[in-house]
Amino acid sequence: MTNPALFIAIEGLDGSGGTTQVRLLAEWLTARSVPVQCTREPTDGPVGRLIRRALSPQDPAAVLGDTVLPYLFAADRRDHLDRLVLPQLQAGITVVTDRYVPSSLAYQGLSIGVEAALELNAGFRAPDLTVVLEVSPEECMRRIAARGDTLERFEDLDRLTAIRTCYASGLARLEARGDLILRVDGARPVHEVADRIRAAVAQLR
Image 1 (cartoon, rainbow, N blue to C red):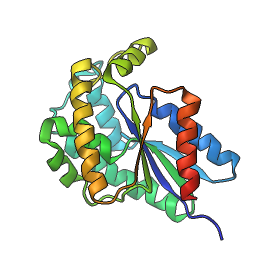
Image 2 (image 1 turned 180 degrees about the vertical axis):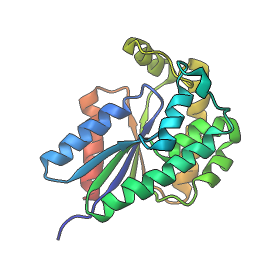
Image 3 (image 1 turned 30 degrees about the vertical axis):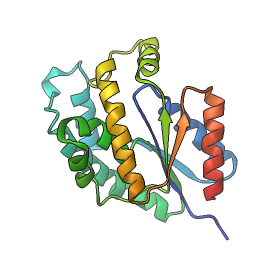
Image 4 (image 1 turned 45 degrees about the vertical axis):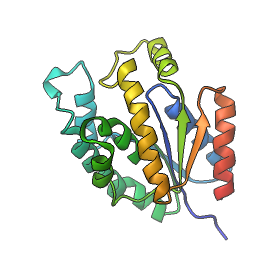
């Protein structure tokens, strides 16, 4: 019997290494002949592009208030599910997304509260596995600075510290409703982190 397609979300603070782990997991799955689609939020769709502009300090004309962003993220997620995630899963393709609902609970929870952010996202399909890369805000900022890129809206130490608190609160609520969440020490070497994630995914398959 063919194993069912999985929906996997990789989460963590900016600088925690999520994008790298999405790529490594997809490469591992592909090497095992598992069809896989990588994706991300905000998406490259019309709402996602607007969000990315709003997060960039290089485009002041696109700045939107913190209380507006939660609704845009929810709209982008709905479009993401309808346009890509659900059709791929139905076609038997495993989907690995760089960020999903927990990011909204953490980042938008700062402005409207975790409970309100959860309510906005309550109707969306839960992943089969959510992986949370746990890295301190200080280490995340060190990694972000090492990249040399222009800092985005949430990339400062005070905000990342507050976001980590919202992450903890949001993840507790998701676990209480039955979501499967794996916490991984993202400060470990990249290959060790990847091995932990692969082992968890292998158990699901």
